[in-house]
Length: 312
Image 1 (cartoon, rainbow, N blue to C red):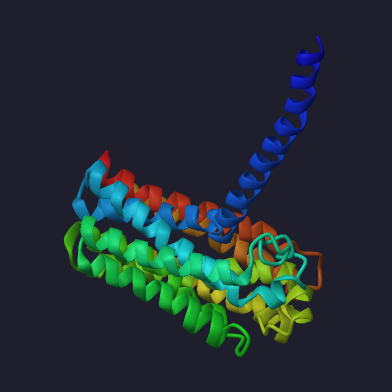
Image 2: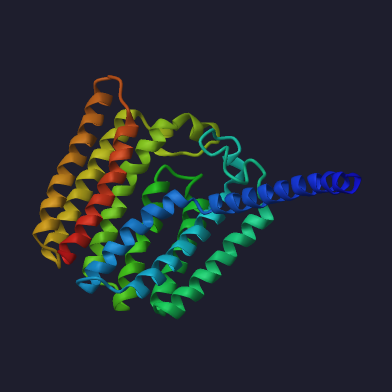
């Protein structure tokens, strides 16, 4: 009994230590995953696969699709991790970002920097070996543009930061197209432009909600430096440009399913944008997050229509 009891008492702390170690390991893995901003990556991938389907005029194949998604995810994760590394000083102050890994010291700045750079290298090699060199170079361009141009240069200096910086978020369609065709065509450029014009109303809606956060850290997002009326008017303008651009694709490689979807989805988006602008102009209560959430649904459904148009 004494021996049995002794073994039991010795095993308890060992088991507790093992459990704590496992919990720490899971927390560390979760922190590194959080650095890549998985929810943003999901939205980027939603645009990649339909673009590949359009480029192939059908299903491009599971192998190529998987390889492109893996490489694209690694590239986006690299850009997002490096963004977190650079913005760690303001993330700790903003309520919206205060739970990010670097803000709560779950990952060291050096580890985050190395992690982001390694992801970028792996993404480049993976895309070059499994798709083509053009796709790998486009992924590198997306990382460099998001980190160096948007995060380091534009974000803290101009209210047009998200307009031009948003171009990085358009790159997955070019990567997806080039993975299939080893080229970039007019249709890919149209899809790029759709996302380019979509980004300002999408992000400015979020920035209107968290205006005080950005003001606190002196980041000149448009809602911080301009009146709500000005922001809402510009959102309407970009929304019209987005819908008009989406219509161009109906004349290049798509059919009835896409044309009807683009018309209906665009009409709903414009209605939401105009409702927000009217509420702001009249001084009524308004909820910009309604347009923000709809903008995500719009983009997902529009690109789903791109794919279905080729597969049906």
